[in-house]
Length: 294
Image (cartoon, rainbow, N blue to C red):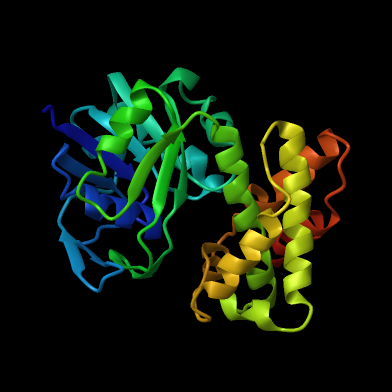
């Protein structure tokens, strides 16, 4: 078996969790973590309580990269594409693939200004994880990563052997992406109220969340996603079954005073809704208010 070299750009909750698990993968020879600031190691508290430790090579400047890798995994925020792209030139070899592990539905479009589309593997990530400090992460539930079917997708999924993250391919990536966006868009309510998942149990919040998700379903269908009528109920059930104190990344960013992914999670629904003549006033309002808060 050929073991592959991996670079993970962005050591946040998702990037750090993925890098830690990949450091123990039999398919991976070496992991390099591309970060803004140094960190000494990764410690991820797994869903079963184990602590997964890893000490990948950490670089803080693209000039420190001395050789290309087989795979680059970009796990930065969706708005941080230009900074992530600065790492690509020294990391890319003739056969290097770039997996984009970001929120939203525009993975390929964000990176085509920087590299050919046929190198890009979009990834839908569903890994509930929260970072408490640099390199220290609580991985709450096993989670999944999903990529388009094909040779590149099969190779990508093999990287996650021996991890608790279920990696799979799909023949209908559009539907998977818009299903995840349906879940993500509702998280704006947490960011707007500054309250964790338990806010869904307060009067009127569940109905508001359901209506916001329905807008996403309608726009997604116009794009070509095969979304069922029960998606809003599924989102509510999942939210209500989450720990009441769980914090999604949008809320986490607001509480920390960081930039928020309001465009990738809500603005895109409003933008594409306008393009296809489908009103999405709740997502538009959420994007507008979150933007103003920055």
